[in-house]
Amino acid sequence: MAWEDKLSPIMRERLARIGDMTPEEKTRIRDLEELGVILSEFYRGDIDSEGLWRRLREYKDKGKVYLLKEAQIKLLDTLSATSAPVEFKRRKDGILAVESLKDEQNMAVVEQAMAAIDGLQTRRRSEFEQAYNSMRARVERNPQMRMQQIKQGKKTIVVQLTVDEAIKVSPEWKNLVAQQDRVYGEEFVRSVQQVKAVLA
Image (cartoon, rainbow, N blue to C red):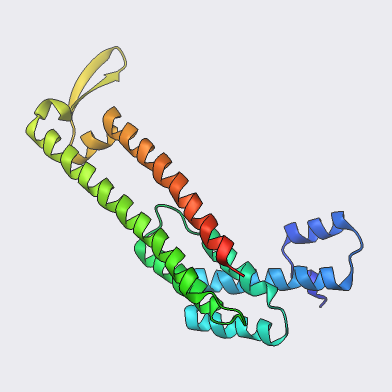
């Protein structure tokens, strides 16, 4: 079976649109497709950072070192400002494992840049939790904040919400979350760009 047959339908369609490619371009596309499969195994937890290191070492041994940076960028791109701590740690461990394969390593700089992202996410979670607890205390003290009017046909009824429900439907809470998402989202994007800039 030709390697093209193993490609995803989207990739085959792209190849068809591009037309004739050089053998080097075909090899590069095949390598990137294989890298995607390896990273999928990593995301699913089928392999850990050590397993990722072993799989990507094969590419390094074949002189395909460009795939190392490509793998790190793809790992970074799966992070968000709201990534769970366990997922962030897995990505960070993967990125550092790949960095250790490079001939010219920036291990300390990459580690420091990833620590900055981790600090940002920790700060966001802490502020979110403080704001939530503050809002929770206000809602618990004020029963009126737990009342909501709902229209049912021509009638309007008043329902009592739980504290958590009242917080989530509160316009004040929604504005706070939107503002926090915007501020931390922008800072997160800048931090990720800084990491990408130090990947050699």
